[in-house]
Length: 279
Image (cartoon, rainbow, N blue to C red):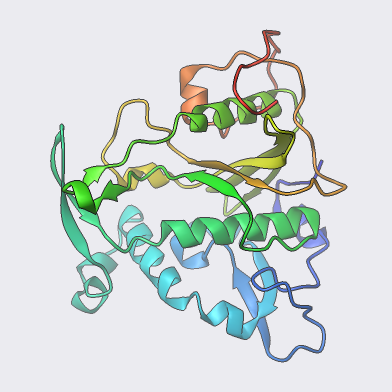
């Protein structure tokens, strides 16, 4: 059950000997530097002391993320009470559009790099927890807590897929039965949880969720819209991976909408097997 809950555990944890961004070995491979994932600039200074996730990667691989990291830092600076978003030179790095919903007219952002950032975090977490490279081409489904829009239909918000609730429910079960892996960093403002299961056809998958502060703060509130990054990717379970319990546990609607639980010490309630495709 790989779990990194504090700075002491992270310092003692075996770090990958490969670059999690490309899979190449680090030894005798040229220029290297330390990558912060999630990017350190997204966090308040007071939260960086305990503790940043810092992993050695190829300098060239890391440099390709500079633009996306800077955009995310601008957004999070607003949450921390900063003024980066009002600096004209930084504003020009962003792109906006109007989004109309049944709640009114809102300003959306066309180049919010949450999608590439999410894949990067997932691949970093996999490498750190399991000491294994996760390639880009894995089959996956990812729900983002910031609604995406369809430009072909007048920028109307895209509905989320119902399977997201099923993955979230399984994650809640895993945490309540202590059959999950996790990483907690940046003064608990970054939390990543995952468990291993399979689809109806037997394909093994890792189900995950993570959040940074509250990503959903960037979006207008939508009823019953899951409020964390939630999804799965296909992969044979590493030897140390934790498989989700077969015990069925009742989860509240709030837990399913935000399946990163504060406490996993609860009394289990035995129920029935779910009818969806993860067991």
